[in-house]
Length: 300
Image 1 (tube, helix red, strand yellow):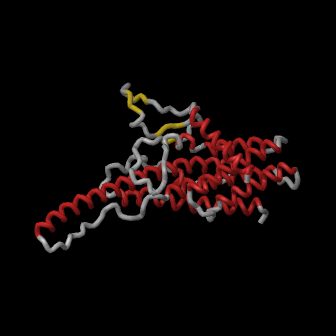
Image 2 (image 1 turned 120 degrees about the vertical axis):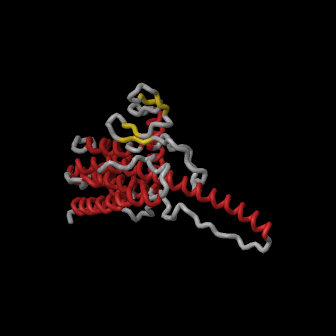
Image 3 (image 1 turned 90 degrees about the vertical axis):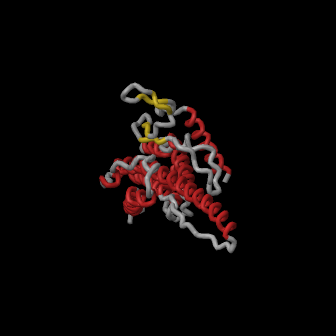
């Protein structure tokens, strides 16, 4: 238990240090074609030093936090590929005769998968936690230098980690409330005409405030969904490259702009048309590849 907590502390410390040194991510301003300078509040999509999409927070989160305390997501999105970089570091160590170093690297990746499974609220049912356990067991095997699997199986376990990280992001993309953003206007039933008029006006204002609050929450969640799907695309591409499988063009197709849901009349319908089908397709594809890879690793 202490070993796990120390490992998690080291991992979180690494995240904190990385947040300070985001060398490839511009967070200040960007030049337009006309030479006009746009502030960071206007810029949505950036790339890191490897050319991967990195979204930054450009809109304030709605006041309703749904029971969670959010310090800031501005540092989260530039760090969304931290786990991918750590998995690729593990891959580079395979076959190098540095079993202790590889074991430590795999334990760090197991910690990332644990965080991903928790963030996606899987309750252990999505295969993400079982992948974490698999990496932990593999690390222990490498340290003991007993019954160490082939390099190919270790590579496959790392690819499985990439698939599970992709799945965690797709699961988090499936967040917007299914409820309609519109609320029905219910008339009051007061006996007094004067009181009834006053209540109706007050109820109207309250209902309008509720509609606006729900719309804002839905709009925010829709934008976050698109950001998670963009990250999942990159994890999938890396997994496909290492695993030798192809990702359908429909899954890798360009996503809607994360801010495109701002001023739409029916945001729920637009989101359902543009994003939900992609989520379902990606989840089905990831699970198919994940199960196939597990069968290969376990020799079934």
